[in-house]
Each structure stands twice: as structure tokens, then as C-alpha cells.
Image (cartoon, rainbow, N blue to C red; front, top):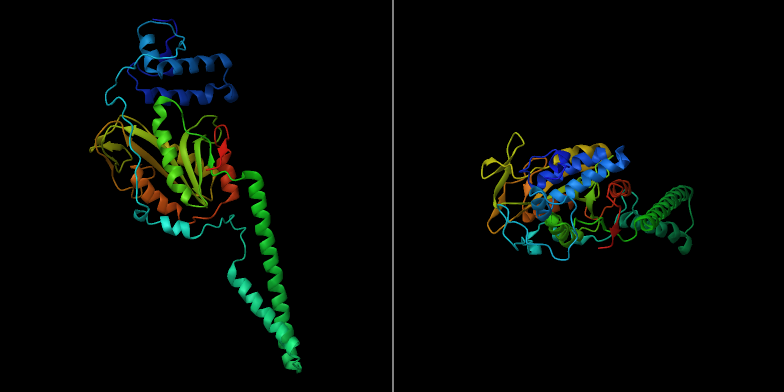
Length: 365
């Protein structure tokens, strides 16, 4: 056995799952990273321990007493099969008929983007202003002689019309400036960050495709991958979607088939029994983002995919803070919730969430 005990470095048992290893690494990295007050040497050791124990082949070699440094080879041996694995199995994403989503057509009716409260005055004030101008100009064009009472009414109408036109001009100017400022800062980006690329991050890539396929239907929706908690330098939240003043934080999971639900005491159940095959930090994430975005409505969701062939179902979300959901349930439930403001982009909220993306990258969808 090598001198360095990587299990002790990460503080996990020798039978720890890949998820346990990843959770332990993320927890320790927040305090051991050089940017958080740690040293380069200790963080390098932590990263080395994670790289070895998160890879099945390297972990087998380490457990057998082999080298602690992972060699780079063009072709890796076939990894060991763990309980629940089905080699080559990739969960299918839902192929929903748009007619089944109650919010789909509603979201597509208004494709004009509204920049928070800084929006154009709309059609009604314009119609009123045009009508007022006609009433003001009509007596002048027709040559009507004004009696004193009529003159007073005409002057009042003229003053009111002028004031309305002035307010309309200011409203359009503010909306135009907001659009220009938004374009300069954010461009045409609707997706910020990127999902994980490691083998154990397949669920994140599936969710990224799901979000970009369906939720970009909402003109105001902005999608984020890999968000840090305030004060952290690591991706503590897999994904998020912001639309107007509503934000959903999302975790992606690949678990065994079965029926998942949240008990009244907050425990996660599978087939009616406590589930110990994986955990969630959504409750902590929601608390962190409530402090960051006090004026934004927040929800959480775990999107669960099956790790092998078989049915995977979830209970109705109800009022649970961070319920497990199938991809189909997520699109119905969360899509409908976000569609309350389908075309609104709040600059301040968008900026705050974008700044939490690890790496800060964005692209146009």
C-alpha cells in the first residue's frame, strides 16, 4: 500500500461510492483551495486523491498497492462493474409532444423580450395619445371658432396630450437604453457555463440537453451550468434556469430504477424505504441563493434518470423544497412555473446568477 492514504485524505471509508468521493472532495476543496486560504501542496494532494479514487481503474490499482500517480494511456482497461451498472446503458430523454405541455403555446405567444420593468409603454397609451392629438388638431384644421368654455377645454386637452406624448417618449427611450445595455453586457447568450464532461457526470449532460431543447421556448429563460455557492470557487449546483424573477436550482442524478419520493421529515425514499444510494445538497443551495437573491422566487428539483433498464417514477412534487422528478415531470411542473413571466429578463438577477457560474462562460443557444 502506498504511503499516502487517499481515503484518509478525503475522509471517506474504503467502500465509499463514487458519489461519496465526489461529495467529500467538493466539501474539503472549499477550505483547502489556495484561493480559500489553503496551500498549494495540500490542495494538490487533495486533487490527486480525488483523481485516483474517482476513477475505477486507478482506484483498483491503488487498492492493490500500485502506483499513486495515474498514468496516461490511450486505451484504458475495462472498468469493473459495480452493483446497478448496465454496461453501455444511456437513459433516454423524453420525446414529448408539445401539445402535452400546457405552457408551450402560451410561452410562444409573446416572443418580445421585456427587460425587467424597463419596457416600452405598450399599445394602449399610444392609441390614447393619437386620439388626443386628433381631437386637439381637428378644431384647428376645420377652422372652428372657440368660445371661452370650449377654449378652456381645448387647452386642457392639449396640455394632457402633450404630457402623455412626453411620457411615452421617455418610456420608449428608457426601454431602448435597457435593450442596448443588455445587448452590450450579455449579447445573445442564453446558456452560461457547460455541463460536466467526466464519466460520472452523464446525468448533467442529459439535463443540459433537456433544458436547452425545451426551456429555450421561453424567450426570457436563461440556463446556467455549474454554479458556485456565494463565497465558493466550485460548482456546487449542477444547473439553474432563470426566467423573470423566478429561479429553479437543479441537481442531476442517475439512480437505480424504482419509485422515489420525499418523506414528511425530508428523507429521500425509494420504494417506501430510506434511500442511501445518493444524497442532495439542494436544501443548502436554496438557502445560499435566497441570501444572494432576496427578491427572486426560488425552487429546487432533482432530475433523476435510471442507471439501467427499468421503470423510474417519482411522486407529485407538492410543496417539497427539493423533490425528485423524472424529466417529464420536471418539464410539466417547472416549465409551467417559469412560464408565468415567459418573456421577462431581469438584468440584476441575471447578472447575479451569471457571476456564480464557475468559469463564467456563456454561449448563444
